[in-house]
Amino acid sequence: MNTTIPTFARQDKLKFFRTLNSRVNSYFKDNNIKKTGNWKIYLKTVILFTIFLTPYFLILLLDLSIWLHLLLSVVMGVGMAGIGMNVMHDGNHGAYSTKSWVNKFMGGSIYVLAGNVHNWQVQHNVLHHTYTNIKGHDEDLDAGRIIRFTHETEWLKIHRFQHYYSVFLYGLLTFNWAITTDFKQMRNYLKRKLSYGEAKSPKILWTTLIITKIIYVCIWIVLPMAIGITWWKVLLGFFIMHYTAGLILSIVFQLAHVVEETANPVPNEDGELENTWAIHQLYTTANFAPKNAIVNWFTGGLNHQIEHHIFPNISHVHYGKIAEIVKQTAAECNLPYHEFKTTREAIAAHFRHLKHLGMKPAITA
Image (cartoon, rainbow, N blue to C red):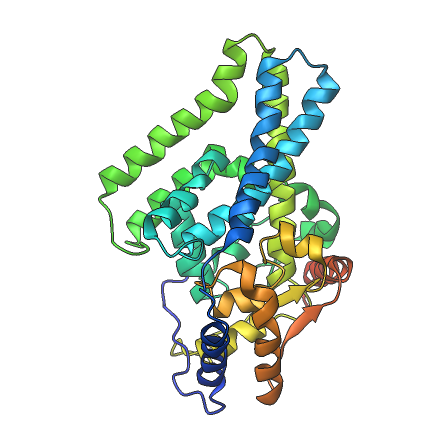
């Protein structure tokens, strides 16, 4: 991880963000709409938690065949991903509700998904949203040595095949949260004194992490075994649930930032970046399937990543409306607005980009 903190350009000669912010604020004021969630996100929360928890209780209460058990595990994974993208995500951005305690409560839903609020807020709200697509600062680009997401990452021979094997590794995202990632991140972030909002005592953070992990294991592994479900069915179902959620979340994340069109800006020797923060988001982010109602609903607006990155404190239920404002303002300033009309196009662009990054770099003099 690079320790030199990049700095963004201060002067926006195009007045892009000033103009855009004024127009978006006017949209909410003129229509008398709050920027936070509304009945749409409340209803969606009920539906997604029903999808997530109903199969769990059916598994606990009924004597199911292995195939039905595994099918319900897949359904739980779908619900798990949906909660993460809609409820937890808006909550931890302070966009779910006008009431801070509601945002905190909904953001805390990450604990039933095997994550940790502190770690997620540092990685996502601080590092990813601030230093989007900057190697060494945006941890979403860090896949260890197994996947090469940027040209700045060291090339290995195995990367020639990454566009084939990467999709199988994507499913391990939340499973790794459950067993190793949170502990590594907690140690790393505390060492670097990184926090989001008011800093908390390391003792409180570690205690919270350990207790929530114990509770999580008890709910999803110990309790099913205790009521008589065969251990291997429990563990297999647990893995499939996580693999399903991890695959969905990883692919949605990659389509926004790791595609052919998005850039990976490199700071100069003084750590300075060419663009202001808002314009930087346009160069490093892409939307996909913006007119697809199902994708819009299920991904929590994460297919509108441009809008989300520029206005992270606005609930995703509004992205469809403000997208036209962002697109128009970007066009007026002659700035990029990367957008794939369908999910299929975005997926193809992602794996083409992985294939390109997997090619052996040309030797330069």
